[in-house]
Image (cartoon, rainbow, N blue to C red):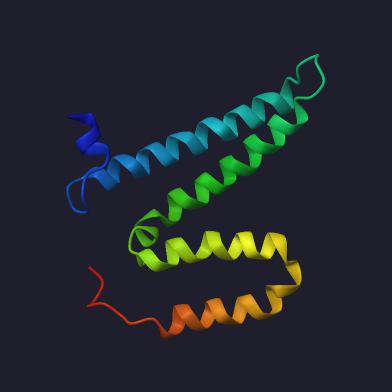
Length: 116
């Protein structure tokens, strides 16, 4: 039953649970970052985990804030953005071409009905 609530269709309350989980993960990661900053462990090598906790925690907090808009995004954008990131990681000079193309795709995409 819990799986159906978590993966529920839009409008069934599943997105509320997902947003709460994103917020909880953000808070936990940011608290881990604070704890590791205030009380660093005696071992070396924790800096990578500290940096990841801060960065992913901040990203999850931004995602939590923008969650209502993110679930309204068209499916093709969710597939295009990771592909664009991979292409730019391999060929960084293509950023000059890829950014205007992505902006054009977003601006010229067909619109659905009015937002709810």
